[in-house]
View 1 (cartoon, rainbow, N blue to C red):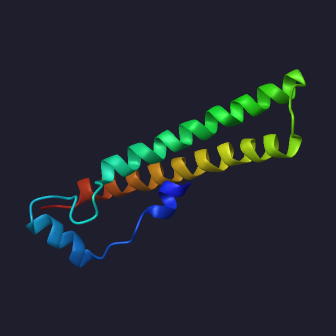
View 2 (view 1 turned 90 degrees about the vertical axis):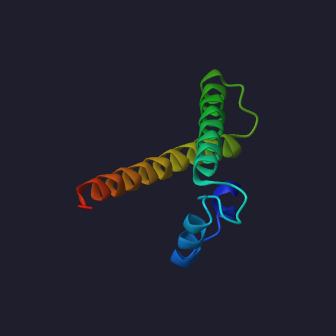
Length: 101
């Protein structure tokens, strides 16, 4: 989640400046693909932790039930967020492909 909080908003002027300077990276240091890859890695890690917590609950080896429940909820919420981002990206792509040049 820290990667999501670290994403800084940019204006359309910044986008045009980045385009005119020859890169989507601009002055931000990390491009969109790297941000997306890092966020997906974070979601994957949360999923693994949630799976481990469910496994611990099922086997009875859970040390702290509250922490296990929190890990499962984090995994669920992060997956929902990733799916919503994917849906928005797909809708944006479809809209862009419908526009005529």
